[in-house]
Image (cartoon, one colour):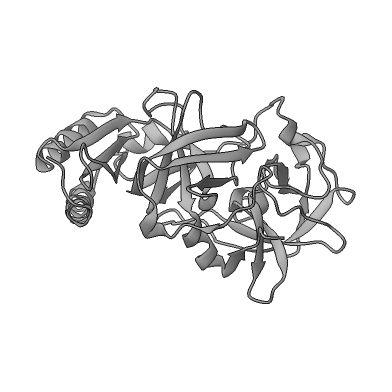
Length: 333
């Protein structure tokens, strides 16, 4: 039988401590498997999270393998044994925050007033997605998306131009400037909890505070987000997609940013219903669930794993993002 949520968390923490303790001094085979140039020393390619059990209020460990190495397989078997066979094991392969890909989606176009889900990007990137509208502690309105969309993977500086549509989709400076970068959460090699940035709307730029013709009601607290939650998103590349939260509190997800690896803790995993929940260029989209409540900020995905084997997406809990950046969701209009 499964275990209570707090017991699942305790077991995950115990196993994660053991994993890190035994991971010291591992060979560079794992680094070469996850990194194009083998220059970064990654974790052992195993992420641990929590999924719902077979009965109400029961939970299981989620084991996500990013490499099919002997070490990773052996550790998965060890964890499954420790969890009394109550574990959800899945191979997800390489998780990436990829550049935007070509797409026929209508969300690539220039749109005024601004609206969530459409193409957007720092003047020096390809394109990502306008997640939602927010206000800071001073009441100033702005845009929420990823660091790698608005701040070019830490390379951006306060005041840099943000274009809509993104450069890959025809946006040019200064004609299509809609915002200026204000601040972002710096990406580190390890221990990240969010890939997020905030840009202040430029003077005279109007925003349409509606999300697929429905107003977001509020933000779902992290502790209320559960696996099996039905969600949807609007993104620049794949448009409107539906999915399900398949794991919560996923730690040590290794994400490839064009050859540079960053690990993330406390993430949400989402799988699409009949097609991938996201693809390159959807980064920055808000993940919405419940009664139109903001759940997460999408930032990466894989092409393997999930119930259909077509990949999973990863999102930062939205409340975590807003707290770290000192923002409030502003969708009421």
